[in-house]
Length: 79
Image (cartoon, rainbow, N blue to C red; front, top):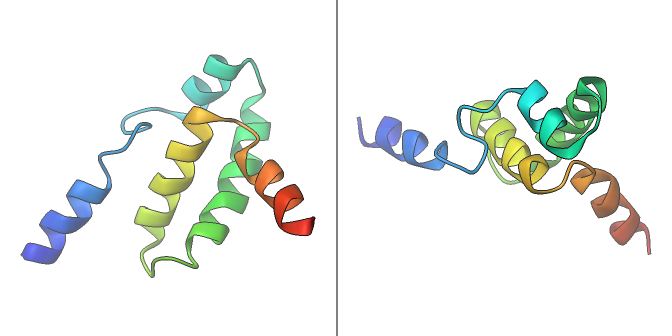
C-alpha cells in the first residue's frame, strides 16, 4: 500500500496528464520527435528505477521542459 502511494507521488510531475501531442505542440516539434525522445528517455531513466511507468514519467517531465533533452544529454556525455 505504501509503495503504491509513493509511485503515485512520483508520477505527479510537470508533464502529468499531458499527451505527446501536447508536448510537441508546446515546443513546435513533431509528435514523432517527441515519441523518439520519450523512448530514448525512458531507457535512460531506467538506470535510476526499475519501474517503467516512473521512468516514462521522468522522461516526459524532462521533455516538457525541453523537447531535445535526451539529445543534449547524449552530446554532453559524449564530450
